[in-house]
Amino acid sequence: MKPFAYERATTVEEAVTLAGDGAVFLAGGTNLVDHLRLGVREADRLVDITRLPLAEVTERADGGLVIGSGVRNSDLAAHPLVRTRYPFVTQALVAGASGQLRNMATTGGNLLQRTRCVYFQDLTTPCNKREPGTGCSAAEGFGRYNALIGTSDDCVAVHPSDLCVPLAALDAEVVVTGPAGERRIPFGDFHRLPGDRPDLDTTLEPGELVLAVELPPLAMAVRSRYRKVRERASYAFALVSVAAALDVADGVVQDVRLALGGVSHKPHRALVAEEALRGRPATEAEFRTAIETELEAARPGSHNAFKVPLVRNTVVDVLSGLAEGGAA
Image (cartoon, rainbow, N blue to C red; front, side, top):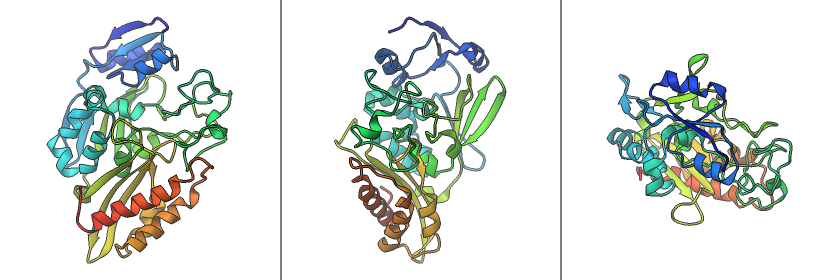
């Protein structure tokens, strides 16, 4: 591991100032420390932000929530307002990692975690995300975990987060601050597709710090579900995942929110399927038709073609369960 300097910020302003020379923010460290040890990432200075006042969940006047970026995953999952108003957020958090990691990992860090593509973490192989311009080993190599949607010639990696999938479905907002001041980023604009710069995961500017994630009020989110399909029952990243909320009246879909994980370089909001479902009967056949329309954009390879029917069947099952009145 390359030696680095360590600073502990006591205010947000101090943290932003310390980050001005290219330092890296350190919170739970569950992803960053691994990459420092592996040599995937180097840093001359780490700025510890765990003492900043960013570890609270507060209720807005409109019924939405403000989640500080320092809130631990385990605390967020157990928060009574999250559990009752946004159950798929709790379900996604509990589905991620181990209890020990959830006790350390933070909301901000969850948004910023990097892909678990095996080639990204293997320094002996070319990887445009790790070292731009060297090539994408996953494109022609082991591709079981590769993305289906939004890939480029330079990268086929997927975003690994569970939490980010329901946040995409909710149209959350990310509040950040940096040298140019505070700004708000719609969640759908926070993460990037790879294009020709797969080394850039987000639209954050250099030195910007995530302060909070804001969840808007959404009445139908009380009937929501997160389903994670993985190769083993615990401590595994999703092959595919689905976050959905559904509002049905008299057998007709009034509104729906649908987001997919494990299929793209960023959490994928299934806007095509949502639009196809609004005003339609809440039936298995309609759910299947809608997600099949969404998946027309998929570009599977020989190793990950199984993901297409897996996504379709998982979405149909989740939406059918919600239409029948279930939320768990």
